[in-house]
Amino acid sequence: MVYNRNLLIIFVLSISLSINSFKINRLPVKLSTKYATSIEAPPSLLETRIPAEGTMFSNPLFKVFDFLFNIPIVHDIMFGVYRQQIVEKSEKMGLDWTGFLNELQASKPELEKIAQRLSNPQLVIPDYYYAPIHAYREGNLCWESAMEEDLWSKLMIAPLYNGALDGDVQMRQQWLTITNRYYSRTRSNSPKFATDLGCGTGLSMYMLDSKWPSIEEVHGVDMSIYKLAIAEEKKSEMPSSKSSKYNLHHGPAEQCPLQDQTQDLVSLCLVAHESPREVSIQLFTEAYRLLKPGGIFTMLDLDKNNLENLLTNPFVAAVYKQTEPYMKEFLQLDPLNDLASVGFEVVEIDNASRSHKVFVAKKPETINA
Image (cartoon, rainbow, N blue to C red; front, side):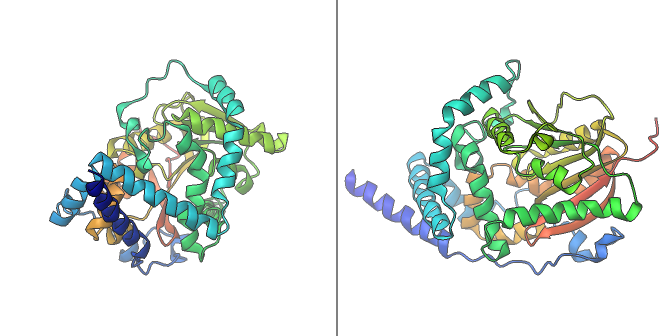
């Protein structure tokens, strides 16, 4: 038994090493300047190469890896080794993963009080939200996931910015800059009331009023009470002039506790690829409901063309399935047409990084009954 377990560990270690050695062949996508005035982008940017359902995940080698990764002991050992390597890698980059977590763990009693205060006792968590996102057994419904969210963001985005630990901030700034093109081009009034759907720990939400000082009130909605508690705790480090603008709500982003046509801006950051396609469309519909006529919806998520290139490797596709269980459905999402089907007019499309795409859509000024 011990001999078999050692063989298994050697096998998993070899797989883990292949994770580190695998190099992504990035697509040659550059930030588009042409998109500043038109959505008539070059075909290479707008092309939605959505594979036929199951194509990417029907490869026999993928099925072998997928079968192995679904064996509990293989899964646990492999991701345990992978996690240890990630921590070591991050600390070599200057990201104090261990120190950051120790600090949050020390403040956990206070975070638990915040969570209790913010918790919505009437909330019924929908089935899809129990998926083991990012290989956490409890998905987004645990402290570990919430405490590591900011760390993962920095670690995963840094390679796109030559290892810069503020790469995730640069990416989000580029997203908001792309969004702001519409306001600048049309000389529209800057937003005053905004909502961030699936706000998590507030990584994107707390940047909104920095980009648009005109913002007077922001609502953040999320189903993870653990992430909301951390987002709320962050407010204690802000000046009251900023923190007082932000209101957090425990609930599904597709069912916000806000009235119709009350928001000028609705944002959705890196949520769609973690959601079933049906839920993403519900989020588009909810954004449309919340916005005033002429209001703006802005979405940042993975660039599907880049992702499809990555997932042609069966091993990587199998790993992705373990960490992003709704990836197959995300690849079937068609934001350009799905937003239009809800009633939006898409006004900007661009890349915020080599791997991240932005869609900006406007709710029509005049709505036909």
